[in-house]
Image (tube, rainbow, N blue to C red; front, side, top):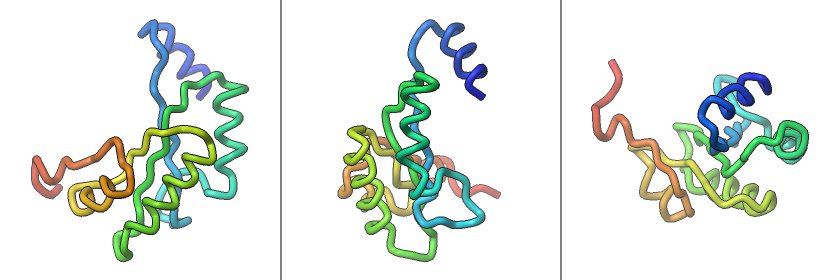
Length: 115
């Protein structure tokens, strides 16, 4: 995967802004790095792969209140000294903004639900 990023960077001649997806609730059906492995993964991406990690992203569980997960992601980002947060979708974007989200995914709010 590292080679793919390097080729993309060379082709674009700029540093890509990369977010690490965190599996914030450790859900088996979702992708992302486990919270317990985040620090090590982040350091590998920054130091060994020289990737421009600018933020973290998450998808909280659908059946639970998202605020606690958004605040946890914010805390994790602060610990890593990164400041961009991609959290919040069409159904919970207001809570995400209150918790410090700088990027939102509101596709279904614009285009309607997927069929």
